[in-house]
Image (cartoon, rainbow, N blue to C red; front, side):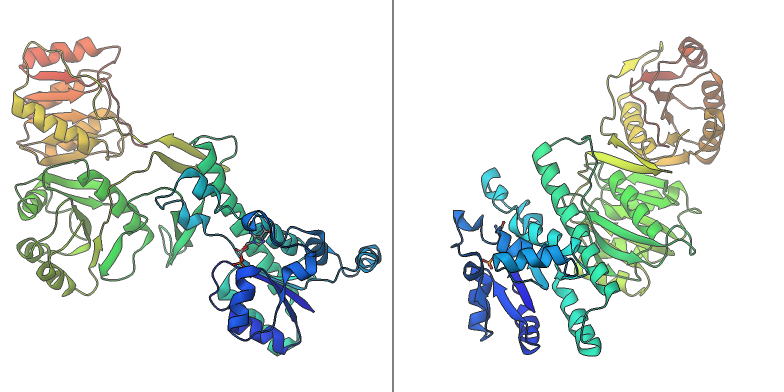
Length: 497
Ligand SMILES: NC(=O)c1ncn([C@@H]2O[C@H](COP(=O)(O)O)[C@@H](O)[C@H]2O)c1NC=O
């Protein structure tokens, strides 16, 4: 038996090749791998002895040769195949052990386009794919973590079982398809290509999905950045599916603001959002927005957490705290609650597209990254500077609330948040009732009727911000003028389904 070993990362190959050698398997390897094995005292044959060719074109052509590929692809119980090998003096290759040029990693490094292109492996995937196609006859390994599995089976059964070979072959196509997808996206630079191949790698298996009877795992992108790719858990229980979704929305929301901001989220809906002069102030104001719903919630900040904020945070039951950083003392205080998940975010949201699934398909769209198109005061009365600031604050919040959504704001505090309603008036009634005393009202979409304005007047709302553009805008404007409310159109809708 013969094995072809050609690996970029040499981890584990000495032990594995030593094992093969002891089992009487002849090892063929490419330049660097050959040198490595030789240094480790493991006998191997250089691939050029098999191909009759020196490696050429700076390593672009080393194993791309019929003596290699026919040795891999020949079906052992096909007489014609075996006769062809015999005629040409080609030996079979029974193990292919390859790991690829690190395109996955190099794509992020500060390299030129041409330098990155050089990290596209051609010979490696060709051998892997050939061996995977012929898995009944060839054991193929593209992941060093599988070496032990093969050693174990070989020791136990004197061979590698069919099921294991098939699994290893599946792993190859799983890897090469992802590798190719990344290259395709790198070259196409098109977020909506003909075929959508997304390259994601499993970051963790999750205990369950939205509910305990649902299976789940968390995958992170291989191409591009993204704040959920590399956060760090500094304390607490393992994260759940729902935690990850909530962290994402809470972090996105606080990243809308330059000033110290805090946001509490429950069931993927903000239940309190506030700005403050520091983290503690922002948190205490967030708590005031809705002291009931925050229980068991996720709280996110856009500033470092200090001791005094941590002391306040541990006074109530929370599931997750999210922030860009934590003081040493703050972390100690938060860590005194062993289940409390403390998440350090390392980057701001940067995705350009978002994806949701429907049965049999996925929908792709650009992220909602434009807040206001143009501000137009449409009423006799104009809002004050403070009211405008409060309404812009509210618009940043309403963007993250499921439609139909209304937010009532008082002095940079989202005191009344209501969403997920099947009509706008119900959302308005809830937000106004929850946010009694709020000054301004913000809506994610236009008012089809003047009912929201009439309701707002009952609660003494001073100013309203909404996209405008309804057939009956005039009715709402007239109602505002009647009640002395000012209204501003933004010309941008923020539905969230
Ligand atoms: N061109 C070829 O014929 C070829 N054959 C194998 N490789 C790759 O060369 C690497 C190993 O090279 P070395 O043994 O020289 O360190 C592996 O990552 C393998 O996937 C090749 N390189 C890239 O395309």
